[in-house]
Image 1 (spheres, rainbow over the protein chains, first blue to last red):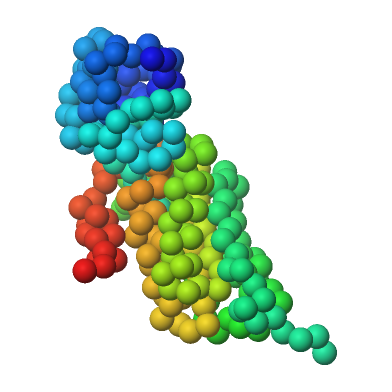
Image 2: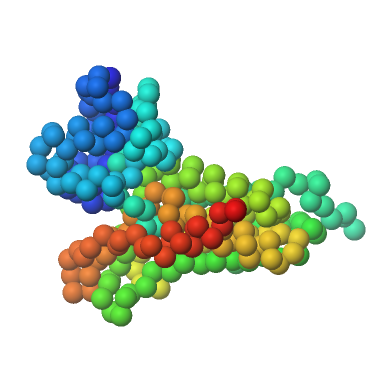
Length: 85
Length: 164
């Protein structure tokens, strides 16, 4: 399955890009599995995602927990805890 | 004399804007209360950039376009329903903002003051933890500093609105 990944703040800086299109293996079905998969793609990904519990995610612009199914997501965002306001 | 509109004539307007430009809190209050006779209370909150004791030259606000507006609108609509507001406006800026500059504004209107206070506080407490914005420090001595860390206190502030 092909999905658009977008990254923000220090996740974006450590991975070294703001977005990319990725082909996901069939056994990646949840947000948590996606994060674990990404961490195997290279040391920049490993550095960005070394503490998965702090990584927040959104599926098609809606907040998503790590156990949430990816389904037919078009766009998945990964980012640190938010600090607006 | 024209009859004043009552709350039953109006859906409560929810206005959300994500913008680089500055805003005027006075203009936003005026827009929310214009031609309304049913509003008895308006509470506004403005969040500004601090220099953290002279350490910072600016904060850089990064956001997730699309989701930022959507997330704040969801919270604002919840605030209108929960506190029976007559209207609410939320504006969040992005880009580099110097100390003293405006970052965020919330204006909540209601027939009575407690709902307006609560609506504004509720929206801000949820916005802090749920709206996709991130702050990066720019240092007074030049160069960039750290990404601002999320605070446990902000999670606690949000948790107080949970219904038991």
